[in-house]
Structure formats: structure tokens, C-alpha cells
Amino acid sequence: MTSVTIYHNPRCSKSRQTLALLEERDLELSIVLYLEAPPSTSELAGIVNMLGITAADIVRTGEDEYKTSGLNAGSSEDDVLAAIVATPKLMQRPIVVCGDQARIGRPPESVLEIL
Image 1 (cartoon, one colour):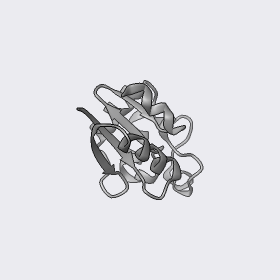
Image 2: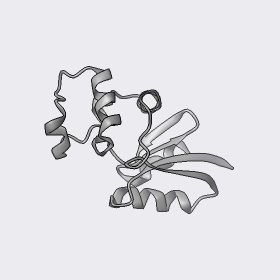
Image 3: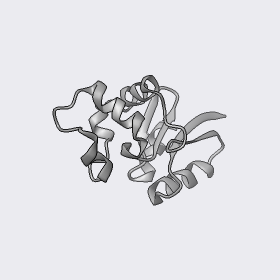
Image 4: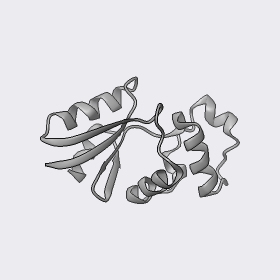
């Protein structure tokens, strides 16, 4: 059985759709409600590395919290990671991790590539 972690926000339709796709499969599923239990800075850096992108690429820039975070296009990787950990609502959702790979569930079917 494959072990899979989803960083989930139950209020997000894409996150709910992605979770439903995962639940349809024979997976050992770990659901992290990241708004209540955000990943640590090192965990988040690992996830970003597995995604193969920068931390800035998983920031939800349309959120009001982004405008007040002090982040901008020139923010360092460390500053972006710290802002996401401090304000997890800034993190793109959902993110699914399977082994040493991760995908953002937008669209939800994109996570199937790593299962």
C-alpha cells in the first residue's frame, strides 16, 4: 500500500476534489489540515524541493494576508518560507506528497502522476 500525504483545506473545493480522488484508491492516506498544523520551515522547504519549484511559486498572492505579509517578487526563499509557516493560508492547496515526489492538486488529477 502506498503512503500518501495531502496538505488539505476542507473549505477549498479543489482540495476536497483531490482528497476524493485519493480516497478512491488503495492508499495509506495521511491528511494534514495545514491551517491548523502547518508544516515546519524544513518540512515546507522539502515539499518545495519535491515540487521542483521555488517557495514563491506556492504562494497565494491574491490573499489579503499576502498584501500584509511584506512579501514581494524579490523576497528571499527563506523569507517566503517563513511567511508561509507563519501564515499558512498563503500556501497553495492542496499539495500531495508521495515518496520523494509532490504535486499541487490544481487540477486535482495532476496528483495522479505521482501515485
